[in-house]
Every structure is written in structure tokens, then in C-alpha cells.
Length: 410
Image (cartoon, rainbow, N blue to C red; front, side, top):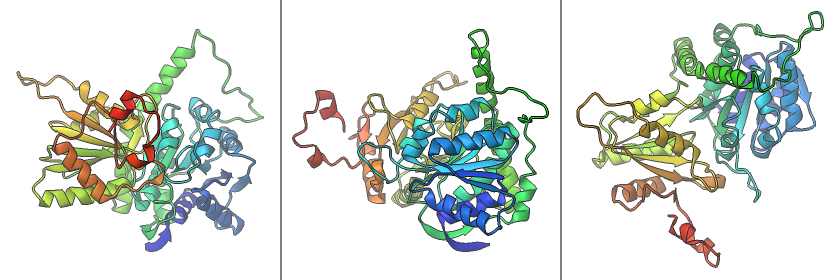
């Protein structure tokens, strides 16, 4: 049933209907409302049986979830920004042990300087830690992805990170439909762990592995995560059949059938991007958008297919790698430069990729800015060989000692 609700509360309700048995939490904005709501549900008995652990740190929260999951409990936590970094030592442990922990990341910038607003630098910092990473475009999708995340985690025995834009989604109040309990139960059966720590039958997990087998262990981890590329669409289809609503999956396309230009992005910025696509289509511009929902594992074939034959791609990145480039943009570029050979005798022209950094630290990515960016790209004003910073305020840089390379950055 649709109801007006804050995004954080809707996610908390969705998580509760997934029947977690252990929730370990430490507050940090902008995810705090999620774990606060869950604590109320546990306190009132609406979520039971469930043990709610208020721990001393984010590291403690994930460590408790790892222990709970290893002991056979369905475990959940949430964090953001520096909180995710504080978990960094434990994050690869959860994936390396194959534990199906689900975690919400309310995406927020990483300091210094201190900034509590939204970008994707926190989740991007852990992109290679072995977790499945799903990015929500809207609060409705954030709700839906949490249900799917528990299903995926337990089918694959892998941890899943559901990323939703901090404040932009977590604190927005809008109409959201949280699936009813019977619907969630039909999708998510009781948790049956693949491995359990039991004093009655003692085993060791996470033991030391030497050089003679470490590579093979990591190889198996890579194979297991790549299996998610097959399972994610299956779970999304099951969700659609159960709810009548399309949500999740690997990538989705918007008005790309005849597009010459496509904007690729993740998260809530897609709402503005799609509005601009509609506006420019009315002006006769052949443009579309591609939403990357699953960032890890990277859906190479699906992205390649979605961008096949496109003349130019504009990748909007909400984070970047200092001294290198961007994460989403580099994955898109690599996907297109390793294109499978064409059966045609004449090779297809290469797609030009424009890598754009936008919306750092909560700076709004407006429709006007996106329209201006597209116009600049179509007008040849954006150099595809340089990283482009959208809405860069040059007046704030006056007096700074910039290298020639930095001065040339757009």
C-alpha cells in the first residue's frame, strides 16, 4: 500500500519484513533514522525475534554481524561515510568468509574537509572488497533492493551493500509501497546458512591460508561474485512477479533505442537526467540514459549492449580517484574499448566517452547543469581526454598554486 513516508523509515520497514535476527548499529548521519526506526520496532516487539545490539563503533557493528552470521543468524547493519571506512578492516572479512550480511550505505562524502552531504566516495572506496553493490535511484527502489538484497545474499552466500543517496533519499518524504509481510515471506524463506559455527560440532572458518592456496581461494571468490550477474536478474524478475513492480536488475535503459548520446549514472541523479532527456527529446536531440544499478560485480556485457552503436557517452560520476580518474567512468571506458569483435567487415566507429565529476559533497546536479553539459559536449567544448568537473567555481580557486595540468582541467 502506498503511503507518505521518509525514505529511511520505508527502508527500516522493508528490512524488518525481511525478519533479521540480529541488527548491530552505530549512529552516523545520514543513516541514523534507519537504525533508530528498527530499534523502535524491536523495542515494541513488532520485529521479533531479533536481538538489537548498540555497539561502540561501526567496526563493532560489522564485526557483530559477522559473528552473528557465522553463527547462523540473518544479520543487518547500516552506515555511511567515515563509518564505512571504520569498518574497512572487517568488510573484506565478511565477503572472504562468504557471509550473507546485508548493509545499507547512506552515501555521504568522505573528509577531510568534513562534509555530511551526499556523494558516492564512501561506497566507491570499498568497491573491490568483494561485496555486491546495488545503487538505488529512488526511495521505492531502495525499499525493493533491500528485499532483493537479502534474497541474493543468502542464495549466493555473499554480503550485499545497498547504496542510497544520503539526505537526497534517506530524508525525503514521498509515496512508497513497502511490500506486505506475506509477499516478502514468499520471496525470502527462513535463513538456512551454508556454514555454521556450532560448539557441538566445532570447526574453524577464516583460518590462515599460505601462498600455496591463497590465489585459488581468491579465484573462487571472484567466480562466486560473478555468479551474481546471473542471479540478480532472476531475483529482480521474481520480485516483479510478486509485486507487479519492475525494480533492480543490472542496468536499465531510458529512451536509448535511437540515441546518439547516452548519459550513464548511478543513484538519485537519474531522476534529473531522465527529465533532461525528455526535454531534449522534445527539441529533437537523440539522447537517452542508462542506469547502472549493479556496480559490483560490474555487468560488462549488459553495459556493452546498452551502449552499442552510441556515438558519445557522458558518464556522471559522484566520486573520483584523486590522481587517476573516475571509477564508474573507467569501467564504462574499459567496457567499450574491449568491445567484442564486430561481424561486419568495417569496424564500428569507437564511442567517445566523456568522464564528468558532478555533485561532490552534496552540490546539486540540476537539470540546467545537465542541459548545459550536454550542449557543451555536443558543441565540442568538452575534451574527452580530460576529466571534466561540472559547475566548477573558478572564483574559489583564485590565488591557488595550480600546476599546468590542473589549470587545463575543465
